Image (cartoon, rainbow, N blue to C red; front, side, top):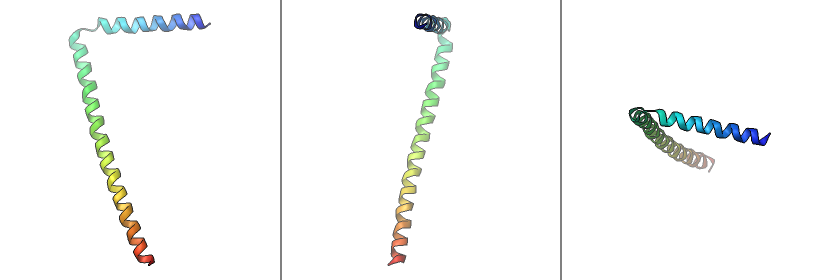
Length: 72
């Protein structure tokens, strides 16, 4: 059973590699450009998320200070 699974996996890998090689270079370049654009967008979004997290932390600290002052 494991041998059949191994052969099927190998066959699938060869088919995928064959289709990648069959693509012309222009299609590959376009595909890579799309991947790079998506990576840039993901990094930009991560930066926005981190900035928002920092703002939230600052606001939480400020709210805690206000609560502490009112409790005193």
